[in-house]
Amino acid sequence: MLSERIFNISNQKDFNEIALEVFSYQFQHNKVYREFCELLNRNPGNISTLEEIPFLPIEFFKKKKVVSGTNPEEIIFSSSGTTGATTSKHYVTNLKVYEQSFLKAFELFYGKPEEIVVLALLPSYLERQGSSLIYMADSLIKLSKHPESGFYLDDLESLQNKLTELDKSGKEILLLGVSFALLDLVENYDFDLKNTTIMETGGMKGRRKEMIREELHQILSKGFGVEKIHSEYGMTELLSQAYSKGDGIFDTPPWMQILIRDAEDALSYLPERKTGGINVIDLANFNSCSFIATQDLGRKMQENQTDILGRFDNSDIRGCNLLLL
Image 1 (tube, rainbow, N blue to C red):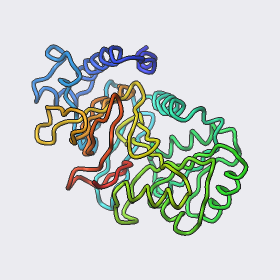
Image 2: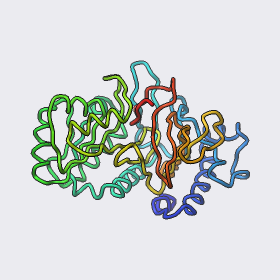
Image 3: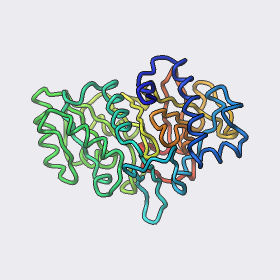
Image 4: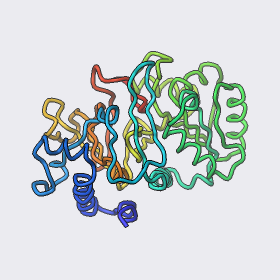
């Protein structure tokens, strides 16, 4: 079964072979992606490396139904956006694959959710329908064996009390929060946390001015009394996430990789530490499109580590966990 092989990738050779297999499958069964590939004169017969695979511009998810195969969707995830803006839609035909992807990645980087108190401060996501982040957070909360796990909307005082109490108890805590809400929290309350991981999912959602990552993390580190701020990099159009345990350097799970394309030549790639556009390979997304050219900027550091820098100028203000460069 393809999903089993994808989630058991252990080396680059496996990744390359399965990526080419997924490309061939999506070329045959994804009408939107096939038409895009044909415009570039790319097909399974003339592609033998990852770099030769066409990456579908993420904007296609705003205007097209990007699916591979004919199975009906089980859920439709949609991106957040400003009033009147066109949002992306991800038609997910196998929800179990998404659940498998985010759970395996979370366990890889943070351990079993059963052993962690999971607190979610995601007001802008809770206030709308179709958020893949809310689906993931809700699943992690339900898997947590701690009754204290849960969502918080606007009751910052209750969250402050609960967070302080839990941290003093010595339990391992994860606070997952959208950037503007975390800033609201530290501006209203003082913390000195010892057992809590703070993970920002990015985005001011029009609630605050955008700021560079270093400034945001400095304010949050001081406010929460922690050394590092963690980050999650995911988006509506993907089924997998990358994680940073500090300084904006992200690691990907074995079935996900990031390539850096030349901003002036979308079909060329850049060496380590050169800034360019982020192309994401998400093999878990085999029922949609696994090869996506984002509007985000980054640079490869070493092996599968990527420095996520921000967005291209004039790109949409998206619901991803990104900050302006």
